[in-house]
Image 1 (cartoon, helix red, strand yellow):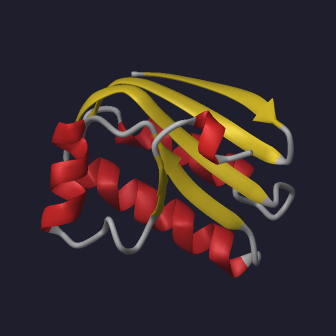
Image 2: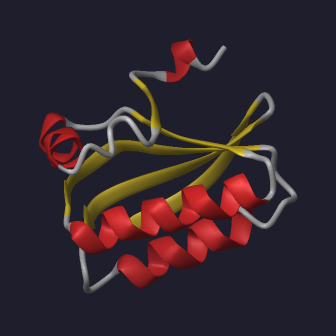
Length: 107
């Protein structure tokens, strides 16, 4: 898994690529917790290059969302592959997260 950061207007974007699973989820948690500390008003996780995510990765996303809400910030997901989106739908988490199809929807 690879994680990179970038800014898009008021949004802090986390670009995640590769598989997110129990073996590397700590990297994602560390990245999420480092930017959901109240310094950023909007955090978007770009999952364009994530083709697999297990329950531990979903748990990390939920934790990031809760931390942003505690700071009255916005947290969303973007560019989710169908396989990962289906997992979110099974857990009804597609209703919990704000999900954007692409960057154009952010503007």
